[in-house]
Amino acid sequence: MSEIRVGLIGVGGIAQAAHIPSLKNLGVPIVAVADVIEERAKQVAEQNDIPHAYSDYKQLIKRDDVDAVVVSTPTSTHYPIVTASLKAGKHVLCEKPPAINEREAEKMAEISEQQKLVFMYALQMRYRRDTQALKKLIEQGELGEVYYGRATYIRRRGAPGGWFSQKKLSGGGPLLDIGVHVIDLTWWLMGKPKPISAAGFTFQKIGAKGLRLDRGWQPADVREQIEREAIYDVEDYAGGFIRFENGAVLIFEVSWQINAKDQWGSSISGTKAGASLPPLELYTEVLGEQATVNLRVDEGNAYLEEMREFINCIREGKRPLTDAWDGLTIMKMLTSLYRSAEQGKEVPIR
Figure 1 (cartoon, helix red, strand yellow):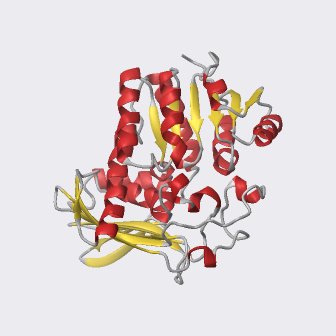
Figure 2 (cartoon, rainbow, N blue to C red):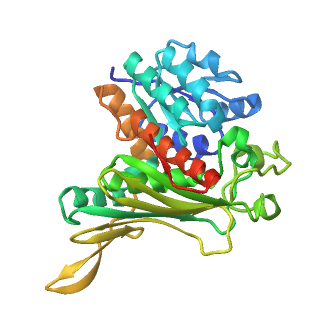
């Protein structure tokens, strides 16, 4: 199949800012869009010369001229939309986090295998140039045995509001929204060891009281003033660690709202050297002296490379870098961290 024809389900912020531009850049035809806000679907279709717009995604996946779909909807809708799309014979790229729980993630992975379709998650940090360069160094043995990782994503005041802060729609707060990115990235850089236990803790000390809908990234419903009331029943902050079968440990902290410095990044330590990003730096020895080497690799366009991967995997019948089974493992780690926070103790990951 030389030409892959795509439909988009959910055309809010990430679809408009990343997925549509990436598909256009790659010359991939967008046949149709669907969004529960019919006016938004029509407007996005008109602005981007997309022939068809629907308010019901089921109409989109019925189309024979749609080979693949990009799902960018609230987390609670991933499972029904993805499973329906896969059963309709469509390849799927689904936004993060994978699902509300690991049972949904497992079922979606199983259906994609049964249908022999490409199913990948939008964990675009793996596709950055700097993370790809660091991964290559680790695989070449430059860091030695990797035994420690740290993942951080802190926003001083960056809660998005809208459906993101409503647990019934999102499944959780910053741990599922931005934590999924840095935890996945760090786990991948560490070689994807098998997780065996997790210890997590959460705070909600600021919540809706500190929610400013005029700051930071906001979902389309907030920007379009469809969502006017700030409902906030998720955590502000999550921290903890994950143990792996090979003895390695990953420590993390993530937050939308905390009185601390904005920062994000991943650091990896091995027996020979360590590294962190951004910027991409290597902590090693040169002529017997400690040295910090700035490798000067920029981030590139991760969204574009993620979409390129999706299209190429469909064309070539390959398994994607961010496949459904990795998504399942990530969901097991995330839900175990929430379970640990509720129980106040370290819990097994099965």
